[in-house]
Image (cartoon, rainbow, N blue to C red; front, side, top):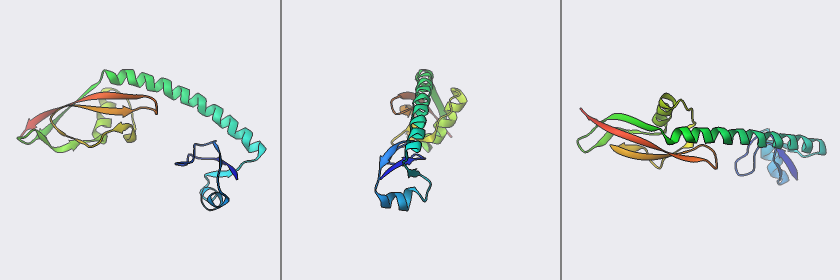
Amino acid sequence: MQVILTKNVDKLGKRGDVRDVKFGYYNNYLAPNGLAFVATPARLKWAEGLQAKAVKAKEEVAKQAEQYKKTLEDVTLTFEEKTTDKDTLYGSIGEKELIAALEDQAKISLDKKQIVMEEPIKTVGSHTVSVQLTDDVTVDISVEVKGNEE
């Protein structure tokens, strides 16, 4: 059965996409949660309009991501944290702290999901953190952590 998604659905598609799904999936999950409706000729025209708007919006986001990339390439975030005698931090620097520093220093607001870190920063020194602005645009930023033994 063909349906049109009204919202983004993980592993299925984005808003306005036309997908073939099983009747039970539509009837038991998509329809009750307001995630899709049955595709009719009029609704298919509506979906085409949505997809055209989505293409324009994606182009604008790509332009903004390129501007952010140019700004972020020159940014070095500096943190001064309390450390032990072995140059390890008492706490750690994670996505939350990086986002706050980016907003403060570079005037760029990002989402926590855009910061790509395997684990929080727990040592003094230079670190590189990836920021995924869009699916296609990723930039590495420099993070300097200075120790402050107390």
